[in-house]
Amino acid sequence: MTPSKDVAVDLDAAPGPDPTQQFLRHVMIVGGTLGDWDDLGVQRWDQRVAELGAVAANAGATFLTLRAFEEGVRPSGSMRWERQVDTCHVIIDPCGNGRARFAQAMADLPPDEPINEATVSEMLYAPADYEPDLIVVLGEPTRLPPSLVWELAYGELVFRPMAWHELSTEHLVEAIADFARRERRFGGLDDSDESVG
Image 1 (tube, rainbow, N blue to C red):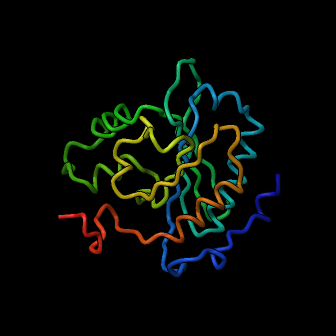
Image 2 (cartoon, rainbow, N blue to C red):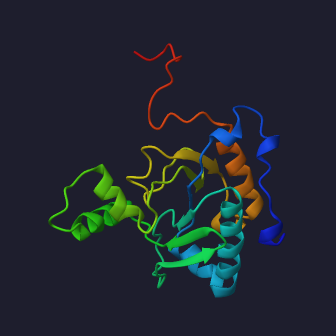
């Protein structure tokens, strides 16, 4: 695999809207079960975090979250951890149950804090201070990850039908280029869509 510092995202080559108008602050990659994560081993995890973090940093993202697609059936000792890679803070979040994560966030919300979109998002994404702009889902587009509940409202989804161990820096570069070509509507509808309304 190409060393992470040599991987560049060529946004100029992406046809469509001006890629400089797309702000990419937080990338999330969702894939694999906790058993798949354990199968990577420590050395491959270190390499994966370093390489993917460098690609995200090169694209301007300050946060990259790696999250399991689902828990799976094998017991796992995976723990949450974080690492700084260049200018990108990488969060490794093995929680494969989005409902459990949401319930824990609500339980952790200080009693004097109001319950609203901003405070819930803050609890769910911390230490990231904004929701994902781009969510790369490793799997078929016919099934959404059970690990995502809240995140699906505004993030741009890019599906890659592949297994967790197949993910490479090139796949992330392609997903970021796909994101750069899109016109984001942040959950809204396109006014030009005549089938609406």
